[in-house]
Length: 308
Length: 253
Image 1 (tube, rainbow over the protein chains, first blue to last red):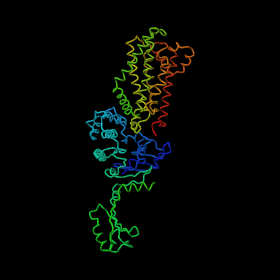
Image 2 (image 1 turned 90 degrees about the vertical axis):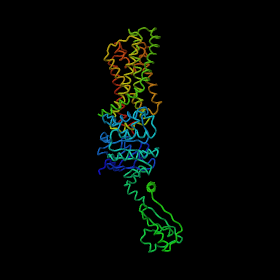
Image 3 (image 1 turned 30 degrees about the vertical axis):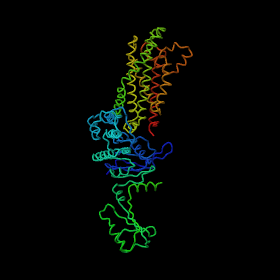
Image 4 (image 1 turned 90 degrees about the horizontal axis):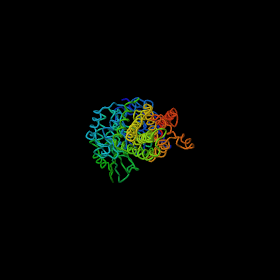
């Protein structure tokens, strides 16, 4: 699949000297959902702002749909919808007018039916004539999404869509994202909720301290996460793994005091029971048992730590 | 040129004006009426005529200018400051629009509002005094140019302002005094010679003089000079806005 967003050697250094982005390279495929995962201050918002034209990159290039975001900003920006992290809305205007304004601003001719259809898809149709300030926080967030979708963008950026949102609304949001993906819209969302990345992303990018540490298919990441370890503490240290246990994936740690068995927790037969029986038969005595599962969080924390 | 975007900005800004129509109109009409009562009736009975025009009529152009200049400035400065303040500016920055389109949208709306108010004040003046307009086309031209150039100035102030205090500062500290001392309520020729010279450094004098010439065919300064002054002022504002958007000053990081 061709890349719809292509970021090359993107750097951003603020006037204060703070290096928010350190040479970012990122290719986003058409129609995918990419979750950018990273701690606060990692550069997620700066990256999005630089792609969308809100901040001027210090160096590097970005193209969207093949258009350079600086030289061909009109074509590039017409393809992009942006949902900001903060609820930035004109409080006194009606929902309908606010969304219609966004559509016009992006150069699309007035289309009341289309605006209403977008509101309906976000369950906002009964609030079309309500003033923005009368809405709840969750509703306002939907208005932000409606505004971003008003000009039928091909690429949608969602900056922390779940920040301060209750579980129900978060699930609604995920449903909206899935529906958009079904219509071929490419979605990039930033989050620091790992469950969110797990729930909706096709690929996950980990960003920390202005650098992309990893971009990986979610399934591959899940496979890593699916690995589980059984740690068996032995009463007497073993010098080697007995021949009778050779067909297990076993390793000895802590100078032979701990036997480690790695297996795939998602399989029906994990082989733990037979292993324990065989341990007994081989004359190894257990003092304690412990299981460990690596999570996306572990991978994430590991990556972020390595960088530090 | 993204005409649809200009229209969208213009419409959205005008909606703000019509939402608060009563406030937008009552306050200028009320203050103008007060000026007529205080200046026109109380002082006017002592002065009677200035340069062959009854004092009540003489102050009409100045009063219109006073309102138009302050309204154009405050409307435009608020128009662009508010999105900055509430954060909706992100949308303008990420939209496929350039600075010319943004400026036309916001300044156009602010100038329209000022023109609207200027017209209302002109109509109000009819209730108090008999006013004749010697050069109607020039009157409209001066009025429109003043609306636009002061809206441009307001737009710059709105971008510059970091808080609501600063937003009020320039109109309060600079524009109001300049307008009051710019011959709104008197003819420059009524001043002592030293003050006549000092007054010539006040750009507003040229605007009010030109506008008054359009009404009564008499002016403090040659009308050509008035036209040159307002054109120069407009050009300076446009240059400043061009620089602001080119450098992203106070807008884009």
